[in-house]
View 1 (cartoon, rainbow, N blue to C red):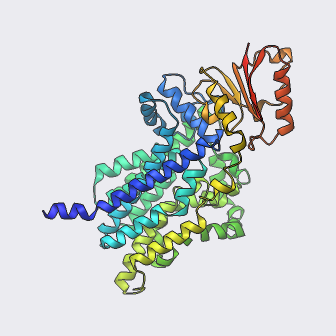
View 2 (view 1 turned 180 degrees about the vertical axis):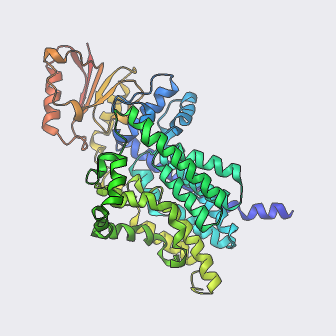
Length: 474
């Protein structure tokens, strides 16, 4: 009877996770349904996973390199098992939604483990689920493998604190398989175990695992599969053109990055990260975010401003540890008998308010209605692409037709003279063009491309309505 009562007390967290996963899945699915998902990166991941599931060479026709060349995301091979059941892009949305929502479970258990009440554990779990970056990233970036690392890293922290070695090893391995740069997060997690938690063996183990994975993937495997260059280096051109050069410049010429720590957009980024939980943070527990520091540093020194917001995926390995900072802060305040007004209800109200202010749910009204006038035409044109033949299309359509070995984007090929004899080798069975695709940013060139295919005797205009044109090879 006592065991049953304990289980009943924990039922609400299961409902919270389930409802959150459903909301996240519905939001990303609706965006995709409205032809607002994008080719880069959703169609890329969908094509890779589909090719693996069909036992075909997983070479992206968008980028031209192997699936492992994209940040050594070996986790995609496991997702491909779902595509073997039934190949559908919604698996990606479901996996990401479930993974992000599941992060609330280790947060909840960790809260209980350090002595917080069930009411506080639930409130902190809600603060995690309503953290604006969680919803925004799930919605705006379509799908990212590192979303799976969010519960994995939190699970690793909880398992290490509980001295569950096998669970810690499994959680760390799962996180590393999501993205090569997460090796840096695992190294920092090792520092956290060693110096903060005083668990030397776990600390050394994580640091060794992270360092080995970094050297294997970023140092060798990824550059080998990408023609000699590691992924993402282009965002740090002001610091160097390779990971080793960037690291060398950071240590030998720190003035290159020091100023970046205090730029207005960086300061605002700090503010955005802590605002959803700022009521409960205690400065004495700031070391809880040590595992987040490598990715935070990369976001700060990057030349790419999108790495400093709550919309893009770059904050995925950061915000979970801010929630960990929150739960340890609550315990600190309780030990000091301070902020007694900081009740679970106050935490939840602040979390709701922060979500309402910083959540990008309004995108469904302000951004995602642009395709409505052409919605029926887009659906009809997509349905007329009957085979897995080669396809040329625009970015918004690509994720709906990426289950094929060859698919190219018009923004890469629209300047080609298709009537030139030297380009006859460029072969497509389908050409599906959408003139209002806002990602294309080359309306005159795209219109010219439509005219070229209309005048090309090798292609037939299969379907045309409003701004949608579908050509098939004669």
